[in-house]
Image (cartoon, rainbow, N blue to C red):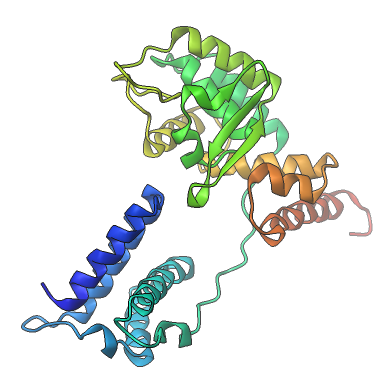
Length: 298
């Protein structure tokens, strides 16, 4: 194995020891393997770590642009390389992280698509009616009620254990990005859905996950995405809805009904207020659309 390949393996092992999320590990592993592959000639070795200069990194990014990857994807891949080189700096393998000299591509400032309160509640009512005759209707209702009622990320929802939920206190403990934990209130309808589900939950031996698949084991975030997609396609007005759409809806609807931005930031578990502020833009866009439609002078 080349020195660069060995160093990448060491970095991924460190991420694993530091309890990086499975999502981060999966993406960084794929990004760094692709980076290594680009730098490896067919009949030779890739450059040694200290030879990774900004020109070489820019050439690699040029290949990503030629492949017409989205700016957000290129940003993530560059972040993976920067983090890897910083690991090498900490360990004395290289003296300078030259990836920091490379400009980060600007991400498009597209506003997230947000279903209206009417669309959201209509879909949740249809899920609760079990119109699709699913095998685990109580579990599916819980998925939608927690995504929308608590504003959870799909990874947070998949990682919930039975002990994470306090029905009497109406709180749950979610593990978010960077393994950070936060508490979130559970609305009344979600509490009722959880009680109905827990009465019928059938887990495999020793399984403490809250949401289970058909084998009684933890339902993965991919499984949750598939369930949401099925309901959105067959029962919803917008088949493009995905789990994060309900997190957007949670924040936007709270803001529209008068909740302050700081409270929404805490409920979402955002580290920076600037991340939460995009929901202000969504609300303003909705307001302008209403104005343009209704005002006689628009």
